[in-house]
Image (cartoon, rainbow, N blue to C red; front, side):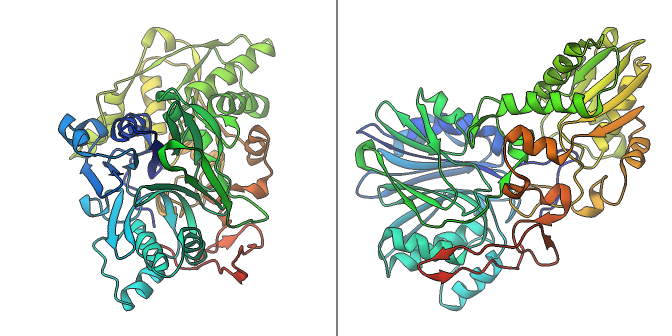
Length: 492
């Protein structure tokens, strides 16, 4: 289960990328793409390439800029490869789970980058260990790699992937190298994003289209849920195999609310436009007339822009202002040994502009409230600099349950909204008023039905069978090679 390391705000697990190019070394394009995906993971970064004869790997802890030097990129030969940035929500917080994960076996070399979380990793690991597989980490990516390697001993590439899909369950967006072939794979319900891009001299598969943009490429389309994409040699097109078809998807709505870059397109939607639309709906559902609307930087900015625009269209006399300044040099590694230091951390990261706030009623727009720590301290800060009243508006429904799909969401005990109604939370954070966006508004903004979204963290009902949790619909088990693939009940 996610361990809830953060003080406030959920964190998505990983970013993945894979490229196949025409004669050009893949290392630098992968490196630039990982920079574009850095927001998806800051714990480790790595690249695996293949030059047609052997596999090359460089994986280090830390940010992309710290993990690679010029010489490291020079040593990563080959025009095909994959990359990964990681934030751990399953497995150890050390180099043993850093990715891409590499393995060599009788049928060649494998590299694997994984975004997501399996719900039956322990079960599959036990089965593989009993058949002689030796594991070097406790992460679920190595489980996928070993299962795929086992299947490649008995089947061709596409059939081997189908067999692995029938055994693993949960959320996954994968980029894979099998020798010098690059593959992309998305789980049957499409929980995690994955897309295909065309470059001048090849193709790219990646978590977000922003990584395609940084390489001056063009977005082709999203990888479909249950689809395997195989990039051609020398960047020559790609082949598609729809390995699994399922009645419903389970797209993670939090990608649009929080995780993804606003300049990325995911499942046909520009994230920035979605967030502005969510802000507009927030005004429609719970608008309150105040003097000034303030976004919590940076994730609240697009919401607040849409909210203020909708308010002004309704002739509300409200100003949109950047009243909270973010210190970009205070990161996760900030040392907070005492409670006083922990409380001071918010002031170090976010400082209100007194002249924007003093003597005014304020509406603060944020993307989510998880534990409530940041929201409580923000209200206090704004009151301290003279706000007459502080209203909180949240661009997502209340988070009432943990995530099992690869998001570092707190346990129920740590979630401020678990077991409390909105007025209880309003009292706890000391806001003049508090309102969350409705689930229906999320579905409308994404132009998707609720049945095609993963809403587990805001309903407590999951689209996957998870031990001890309920499901929000009958689980339609995908048919793979004529066999029913059971959805596992073990959780990580």
